[in-house]
Length: 252
Image (cartoon, rainbow, N blue to C red; front, side, top):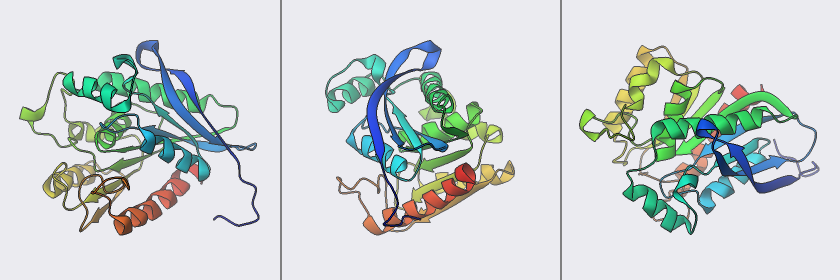
């Protein structure tokens, strides 16, 4: 709980980390100042790219007491404007799932190596980053909490699979390694409400710890205040669900 007499400080900067196969990639890192110890958060950016919204969100988590990092999943595509780099990645069919998981695990290991880490790490992602969040916590160990926001393609049909994305993440549900919170809009087309239902059924079947929050009047991307998809009431309520969930699993 924030009080007006508390000390507050933050450092934020671009850093380099070791990603998939030991590749050096860049990442945006923000942390509270002070001795800690602090839990960590890895933020997995969406298909619009490694953009300003994800930098702001990285600082948002740092403001709430998390050492936070957002790796640039598109580093290997070269550099330029976010739109230009993302267009290049889109034309190539996206980034390979194995590479994403490797980069996210590298970001998690970076946070865990910090001297003021409390040893607990969460992961957050929206859109394709929501899909990658669920995929990563099913395929990699070491995470203590996951926030999946409208993960498009988690319950993908066989005809939608590609060489870059050869397996639907839902098929890995039994391997989920940590508690999960899911945030979804009921007007979304990817994932559709039926796909979210399937997602939830598989979590129940596997006996996993999860909570889903589903919002009427909200579609895809309803957190993004700079877009017509933004839904203020639903977005604010979602954040009020996310932070207590993380407090329980990462700070408790």
